[in-house]
Length: 324
Image (cartoon, rainbow, N blue to C red):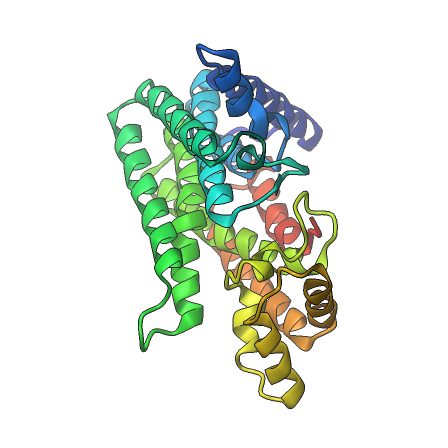
């Protein structure tokens, strides 16, 4: 691939992401004003656009240059992601999403679920324009996402390691779609099959890093666009709380007992958050996230040098050090 100056490459990536943003809003348009408003609600609130960015970066690793296909592929994965957020917020009874009232809080659970279904349908329509291999991969990815959500809902079976079960859940719920994002970009560019496989593996690994980093941020940050400690309040397992099970001092047992209790009282949640923020388990969780980021970085070593590879390497650092 032909290397571009870093500044020019960054500008090209930003321009492509701007096109993708417009594509997402167009895809969310519907026959009625209500559905359009509800479907564009989460998109318009913004977001990191992590998955579209991976599509764009991965599309630099092959000889084919097809901006229209890149925009379509990126729109497919982001629409799928956004659709899943509508359903997640219903299940979590969330009231905030990206700093704005969640769709379920604003329009009710039924509308939020149906709007999520509508966005899944729009993603399916777009992916069909890319070809049958993309449709098949999207279907497999969606199946993994749903199975991950079911596994999270049901919880680990007797004898299962709770931490491994959680990592398996994340591989389905988060890693699968991020892996597909990187793979879609490489496929659109007609990248070498070995490069495609490597980028898909990188996507799944960095996806886990991204989510595990979110677990820490849910505890340590007040600037996430949603209520701090939301996962704690809902009793959702996270990396820090699962690692805490390995601590056995009296104060740790007391903290675990409160974590397992009712945290719907704001004062109780604030007290648990304050204690967790100063607990050694946060440093342990950060160390595990850093180790996984290094594993993701190692997958990039054989890839062709250039600004796209540099951006992916930098991403490994950014995902670990971000605070929101």
